[in-house]
Amino acid sequence: MVATPQRRFLFRRPSVIPGFGLTFGYALTCLSLIVLLPLAALVAKASGLGLDGIWEVARDPRVASALRISFGVSLAAALTASVFGFVVAWVLTRYRFPGRKVVDAAVDLPFALPTAVAGIALASLYAPNGLIGAQLAKVGIQAAYTPLGIFIAMVFIGLPFAVRTVQPLIAEIDKEVEEASATLGATRGMTLVRVVLPPLVPAVLTGFALAFARGVGEYGSIIFIAGNLPYVSEIAPLLIVIKLSEFDYAGAAAIATIMLGISFLTLLAINLIQAWSRRRFGYV
Amino acid sequence: MSEGLALSRAAAARPRSVTSEGRAVRWLLTGIAILFLALFLVLPLLTVFAQALSRGWAAYFEAFHEPDAQAAIRLTLTVAAISVPFNLVFGVAAAWAIAKFEFPGKSVLITLIDLPFSVSPVVSGMIYVLVFGSQGLFGAFFIEHGIQIIFAVPGIVLATIFVTFPFIARELIPLMQEQGTAEEEAALTLGASGWHAFRTVTLPNIRWGLLYSVLLCNARAMGEFGAVSVVSGHIRGLTNTLPLHVEILYNEYNFVGAFAVASLLAGLALVTLVIKSVLEWRYAGDLAAGARH
Figure 1 (cartoon, rainbow over the protein chains, first blue to last red):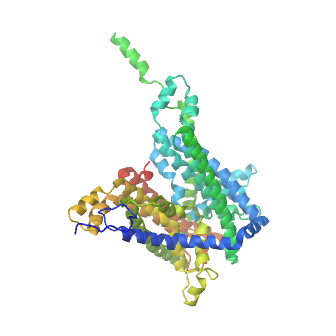
Figure 2 (figure 1 turned 180 degrees about the vertical axis):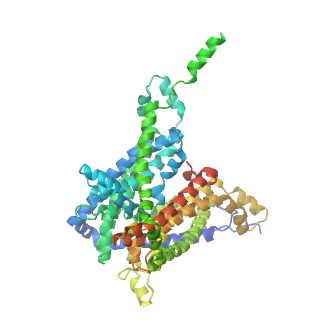
Figure 3 (figure 1 turned 90 degrees about the horizontal axis):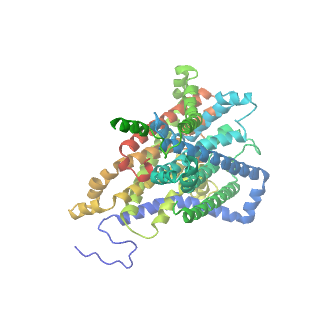
């Protein structure tokens, strides 16, 4: 009753808590069937094409332009979301003003609002006869049905990532360091630039990367406002949908693989920057 | 003497804090932040309700009388009713195995569970087409047996499970890791069975985290668009979920109908946000660290 038989090799550290086999086995089975197997099907399909086949698809002018739009606009949108996201995070953690908690809760709206709902709302706001679109039209700017519309939708969808990755780090800043800096004669601006901001850079970069990756893959909130003109405002995820509806599975898999590849490289670059800054500043 | 003290106190009463910016900068930054959020987040939300009610309440409610709309509501509820409990059982099982035991490869497992978060919604739907579609890996097998998965409800459920897969596990894993195993060990030493210990010790400890994550999982399950759009086939009254119904109405220029249905989803999002915020304010200590701010 007392002795538990020694296993042939100990996969896990012994414990009195039961249920490891059951829960581990169940979780692993679900993970394999739901996530790993279908993703493997994508890899299989793409590797069936070979590098030449994928390159062939990427060279197609329409595909190349969709990829350029998706990645280029997402880059600009993630930059914008990071800058304003930082200001929002700073204001929400450092300043006290009435309604702060409500504003704080509102930041998560893009997480909670279904993308299609956000999509039609943005489209109707920025359409030439919409509330904001009409004002923009007066100064000669058309937002809807152009890359600018894609940009707006991507900022919307990326903002919470930018805010939520920086916010906890701002809250953790040790004020004594700022006091020391001020005592030693630094102006507030110098303290911010030299003392407060540098340790936050990795978090800002992480938020940027998350917003960027989300923007590249985003579909629902973009397609309504984008207008989807080939070569002008057609995003890569939409092209995947079009290829699938034409039963061109190989073409769709090739675009998906290219997107995953570029996203992977971006995340790798961000990780390298983080590793560098960890050496430079001591933490992420 | 006491006069001098009072004077120096008055002078010291309002020194400009060295750890904050000047008043003007504070006002400016707060203004920018609020204006930006109002423009980008609040205005689109208000637009949904304004557009939905732009032709009055009668036109608003008419959108829900349509049989296609009611079928979409039923399908969305059905899909959520299958995928959320599935992910709940998976999330609890995964968190139990990962948080209560020590084994190699744990961080790889957590990364794999997180994987669906970094896959584009469109690709999430597409991988199921590649497996179960007519030209897919097992497509021929299922067609032979008369089982349709893609362009049918099973495909929608699978795609929804995929996109919401990490929600519950990733909240529970850090939460249960923080709580450790001491309480369960005590219960087991006192003679409780494993199931009894889980139900009376673990479950009460994680209840707020569980509610929190189920809430977020449900919101995403009911609102998912991209992944479901790829596998659904858009058959009205049969494979149209609420977000897809919004798309169809919008593309038919039935704006009041589209925004009326959308307002239902926006209402769900608002309720989710409110409960989520209340949980974060009141039960912050009972949620995983990432959920607190």
